[in-house]
Amino acid sequence: MTLDELGTPLRDTVFVVVDLETTGGSHLDCAITEIGAVKVCGGEVLGEFQTLVNPARAIPPFIAVLTGITDSMVAGAPRLSEALPSFLEFARGAVLVAHNAPFDLGFLKAGCGQLDLEWPGFDSLDTARLARRVLTRDEAPDCKLSSLSRLFRTRITPDHRALHDAQATVDVLHGLIGRLGNLGVHSLEELRTFSSQVTPQQRRKRHLADSLPHAPGVYLFRDVQGRVLYVGKSRDLRSRVRTYFTASEMRTRMAEMVGLADRVDPVVCATDLEAEIRELRLIAEHRPRYNRRSKFPEKATWVKLTVEAFPRLSLVRKVTGDGAVYLGPFSSARTAELVVAAVHEAIPLRQCTRKLSVRVASPACVLAEMGRCGAPCLLGEGESVEAYSVHAHAFRTLVSADPTGVVDALQSKIAALAEAERFEDAAFQRDRLAALVRSVASLQRMTALTSVPELVAARPTADLGWELAVLRRGRLVGSGVLPRGQAPGPFVDALLATAETVLPEAGPLPAATAEEVRCVLRWLEADGVRLVRLDGVLASPAQGAGRLRSWLGELQSGRDSVRPFDDRRHLRPLERPARATA
Image 1: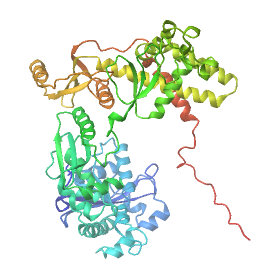
Image 2: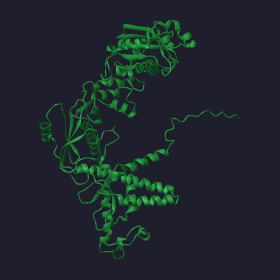
Image 3: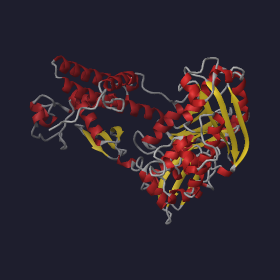
Image 4: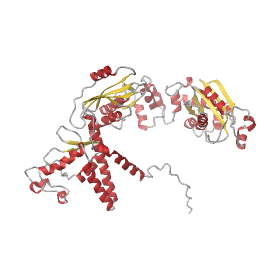
């Protein structure tokens, strides 16, 4: 049995309860002296395994006193090279159980490594860890095997001999399973992930996953009125949904959601990419109460260069077909404001919000007096339409082709501030520049895809087939899996014939949201992806912001290096301060 078969009944699960005696506490410099194991299923003992092991070294005196195993007892015992393969064969196909499993499994894995044996990859359970989750302090002040043996009145008293301890652990395991059965835990997966934080009501709803397929796709939790509570995706729908009824799902709001859920609807998808895209679309469509991201793509902010005689930058929510230049989208208005401020530092676009006339002069603002604006509002005294158009052209070039001029200007200002030892101001300008470069690079990367009328790409699957995706203007309109050995031509033709028709709208994202386009781009950039058909040109600007990714990476690394105390988990006091006395 493996945990890939989630929901395996405990009564059908074969357990091998194992215990080891060793020459010390670390598998790095100690050796096994005895292996004891009991194979059980459905409460019945199927077999036992016991052997002493010659550790090829002296047994420390205190270990000999503790276990009763002496050098003379193991002198004629088999070496690990004989004992370990025999045990692995005995335990093959079962779930390994041990009390303080990391200790026993650590020695077994280390032994496999020494003998160049492949570790079978057993599933495992730790009765000590399980007991801590099931028992209260009143029942068991500690979870030592001897304490649990007294609590569950095991038939064998543990005495630091491997087989006896394994036999006692069998009774402890059955006692714990009996406790959990009353709480609705009846499967292997539920046993491994049990936690008292999962309510009985939550566990009782695990039947909602029973009808779901083992296939990639999207799942929708609905309440009794059919309203969508939560949308998620998975490569295995049934396995993922079952985790909502076990301890592997620790989010408090998900427990609340499961309490309201009445059914789970699956949407089976041909590929993982399709599942990811459908999840985004369904979240945007239903806006589920318990989803926190991707619910309101229309609330993203854009930086717009207005269409007028003297254009200015404006923050807007919607892209229209007015011929304006747009930069974005930004999930945070604060980030959009940083980008606007960075542009204004390098390009003297006007910052006033009123509409300027080419015939009637308007009073100049304080920025004109400071020399940070060409004062086109003054008409003859300020910049003309032709002179001002240079600034608008600089912004268009920044967004669509080459940010070099703006980046160089801002880096010069940052260097001057640092030279003047105005380090906080320099850091602030650096953050503005980084936000600008990231936004331009992201837009240019997305625009390269959304400008392509049609594209078919393929990615190899594990079984030597191909995942195919049809994209139109950056929108996923069709997907499928081509089996190994099948002719691709007819399959691609059929996929194109049944693909969704796209009527592109205006703007950099004419057919899909930014999150969907980024998702598709990640898929296209994965290893092994190949272009099958291409209508148009797929290319980013040669001098675009993408070439500055290494600079952004270095910047982020530098920022991380000066935050040594963000994660304080590794910091521990060396000694507790003495208590003050009066």
